[in-house]
Image (tube, rainbow, N blue to C red; front, side, top):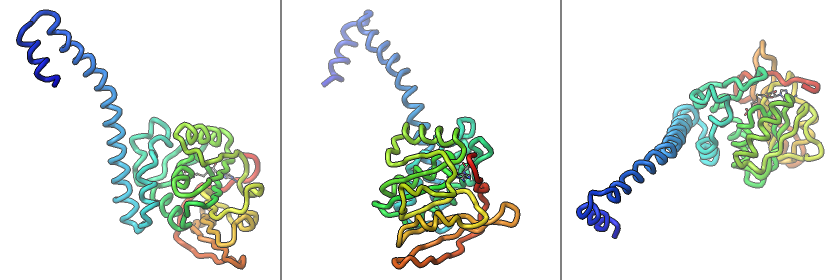
Length: 254
Ligand code: SAH
């Protein structure tokens, strides 16, 4: 429909009116180039995320399809400082300020898989940091409650999660050692800073049938990732998963 009309105009007149569509096309073209750049950038991050999942995560044995999909979906580059965006999909932790780090993608995926997230689960995370682990969990469960001891990080993560639309995450500033008794019990507890012993309040706030993943030990003598499960009768079973290296769980008000 439109093509013959334009052709007709171009053939019959080479005056200013024929030049208009060209100018308009150029202006529109420039405007579109900006949008295309953004789209290209988003696509290249999507490519980086897909590569992160195959090269770093499935290769090391994480196979839960829902977890892999969440890792492919959450824009990790928006959880790191702007200067580090190009390294966001590297196989390593990255600094997020206040001497804290966002965990290595594989560790986030591993911790998420071993707590076996279900769509209706209530989750408590200790150590919000950037909010990335919360965002990944939020794709897979009903509700995420997360506690961060560094007030500035808590506020930053809260804003970021809100802006990105992760509406089922609630952030609180405080010492996560004591858990969040008002919101207990939790089907899943994920601790992303290492205490030298398992905090008893967290064990108490784990629901029957619940799973907790927690790095335990000192930075110097080494930490072990533990999976702690509470069965239907309240019995606790602990399994050592793998050696890890997390920032220490601090005590007090931060
Ligand atoms: N899960 C985070 C990474 C966390 S790094 C992410 O996805 O980005 C560990 C975080 O635990 C740090 O931000 C640190 O400030 C916090 N932390 C340390 N001790 C804590 C405590 N007692 N209660 C709550 N958060 C704590």
